[in-house]
Length: 110
Image (cartoon, rainbow, N blue to C red; front, side, top):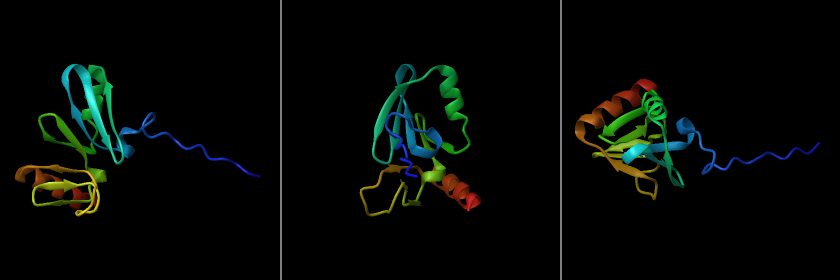
């Protein structure tokens, strides 16, 4: 019996908690989602934004940027890496206070 598995198009049907590395809030409900191989903008209502921001896996690192702590590979010298340090993986700068907060969250998770 051959069963073909349906591949999910991550760009069109992404799951925020498992696919998104980080997201940035824009003007008038526009949210920019950043995944491993894509960036996608989507309009969201105020309730959807409130629900998104309240998810426990996401930590605010600047006024408009939230990162998924589950997807962090390492935090070194003020930079959050979402893959190996010296690669083309996505990375974001983070201030020292947030860097310590993120490291504590990661250590609690392990």
